[in-house]
Image 1 (cartoon, rainbow, N blue to C red):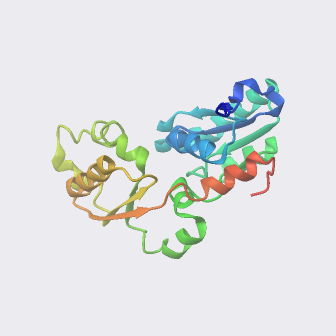
Image 2: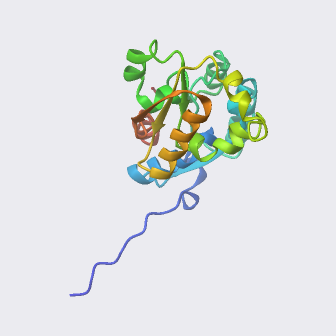
Length: 218
């Protein structure tokens, strides 16, 4: 008996534009969204990312998304999901989503989404002095924190920049010893207590599952 033929899923680009789910997301979530796409078999999901650096300039997020959504609609996309939580926009992102009739990732920021909103609500007060890191931030620790803040030249300034924090909480999306080591070294460098929480992809999974099923209500 001949082995069964392997049927490869169609890539998103092979679907008509009107049948694709376009996710416009923060660059900090790109790897995770692609992993969830694979996990859920959302072959019609297409991803576009805005610069991860907007994390430090949240006033840029809403205008950039407004333009990106308008451009996508002009290209013929009908199903669009915003891969951002509020992320420091002070409600401006919600106004953009309402304007275009699209949904976003629920919650105040991705750190809450990874933990799950219910779980985050339960520990929010205890985490008021927590400095969060994710897989992305571990991979980009040098580029996002060390070099921009000049800590490679003046490590003694770490306590000045991070003096209001008491602990570093690594929200781990995957099990990666190399990233564990980065987070542990970062905590030691910043003079913070260390805690690891294995969150996986949290609320990103059900949010994308609903979006992929053309359900926009979150």
